[in-house]
Image (cartoon, rainbow, N blue to C red):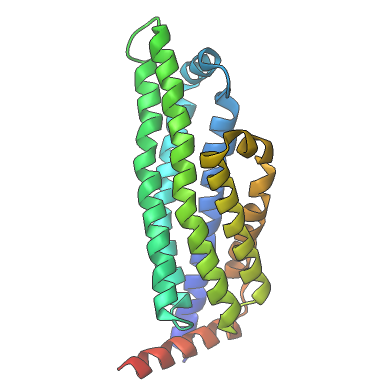
Length: 241
């Protein structure tokens, strides 16, 4: 049992580091770069800021894509960690998460398109400035659509964590609250943009807390708890044969 428990411990720590990197990359692209360069109601100001900080804009796109690359091993680890509780629910959470990642990866083309429009001609035609801002707005809606699937993934995982017996129930409740937060923000964005603007960014604070808590647990989980996860995974595999 020492070998598998050791591997699980290392896997959990690596998953925690990956989760931490995902949070950091996401905050860099969305909060720092787009939060500072995009002027919500002013296309000309947004265009000037992007052109003046083109390298930063490009770096944010790369950071987002790296975040989604890291999604893949994290999704796989969480599936393996939660599979002993309920294989169908763990698979459902994984599929929701995969759809979210695919949507968000494709959504990055809108950010590339926004920059391409601004670089199409100098001086930038007014209509290109307006279209660039439209592309950025479409990215915001695409981001919200992707997070609908992640919100449902969080809700399913919260049930699995609470039922697991080898993970703290409070982590599950916080992940569930994060899922509700993502869903509230995304549906408000689609159904009532004015309400979404009033709620943002406070509505996403529970999601940050929940994901940070899960990340910290992965980084510092007790080895005995992880051994229990291995035991349950092994028992589930034996029972299925």
